[in-house]
Image 1 (tube, rainbow, N blue to C red):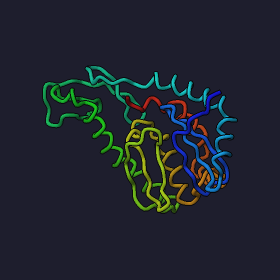
Image 2: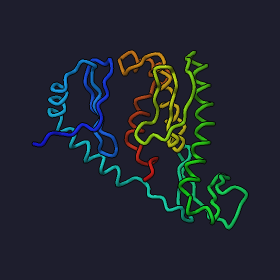
Image 3: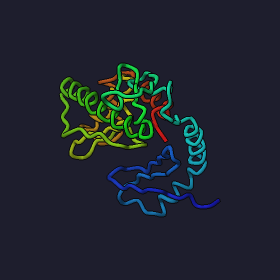
Image 4: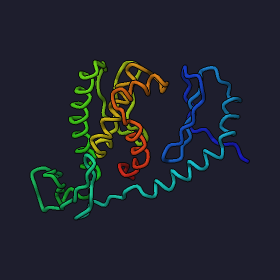
Length: 225
């Protein structure tokens, strides 16, 4: 069997080796600072069957990713609901939401950019409000909020307390957005995925496991090619 290629190796103060297969099939290995390359390669080789099965599963998911053509009647997600697109001859803003999306005819060739810009703006407003609400409710502190273009991570928390969320998150249902927000806020206290971390998440969101499972099973709905 040929050696499995590691696309990215991330070293940190963690105690164990973890494997992450992204939706595009890339293999990311997270390893302890002092773990030898030999040990890492052996661990990856021992998980070759799991890696291959996961890549096949990710390939199947990629085939269900929506392909947008920005045509009349096409459906677009926003806060967990799908809304039809209407193409209009002209309007004040190229893209508007009534609810229901309307896109100016001349903007159709640049529909992707208009939608991404609109989603990003809505994500900043909505997510900032929810982060502020939960931070105050649970007495948690963060540095600032950043809206990213991440394709494979819904959110992250930096060592200095900056919370990052992909603009794609605004397409998900509100209760799923809340789960991701609470997950990242919990990282301002526990900078790992230890039992203590999950206990903190559960104390704020008792059914977090249901939300987490839902997001894993449906994440492809909110990705664009």
